[in-house]
Amino acid sequence: HPHFDHIGGLPELQVFKKIRFYSHEKTLDLAKHLQETFLGIREWEYASLEFNRWYDFGKFKVKHFPVVHQPGNVAGGFILEVKGKRIAITGDTGPEILRNHELLEEIQGADLLVSEMTQKYPIPKTHLGVEDAIKFAQKVEANKTLFVHISHSNYAHEELEEKVGENGIVGRDFMVLRI
Ligand SMILES: [Zn+2]
Ligand SMILES: [Zn+2]
Image (cartoon, rainbow, N blue to C red; front, side, top):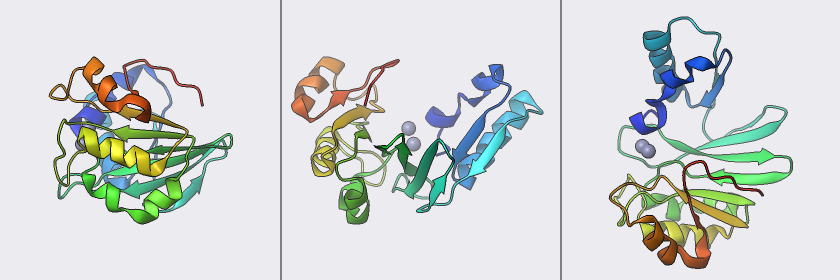
């Protein structure tokens, strides 16, 4: 989604000759604007994804689903199928995702769940708190859960690890996970 912490670093990708971006049209519009403004003409590609539709790109399949994340903003998560593995990524989302029963059913038992855990306490229609994120993980029952998008106002990493316990892994920069 087109928030600065997700898309503001786009001009840094200038070292790459070819890139393909996959996202909702509204996010791609801003991505193109950033590219044109900062980098000029590029051979980059933009693949627009409509919500709630599966796309088969050969090496992987993807479905972009909408989430509630700040009124007026278009934001979504992803379900990916790669080499027989199913990966669910919440993206930034408000706690309303816990009541999205259709989604919960679809990602139940995924190989990997990547859930946001931005704040100590939830912000309705914006971000999950620690407890919500854990509750969400418990509902999904993925083989592995990774909590990410942790803000500086959240608990310190070690404290979060204690709170999360057996419910998942607290993400770090440059982390590598095998599924
Ligand atoms: Zn955001
Ligand atoms: Zn964000």
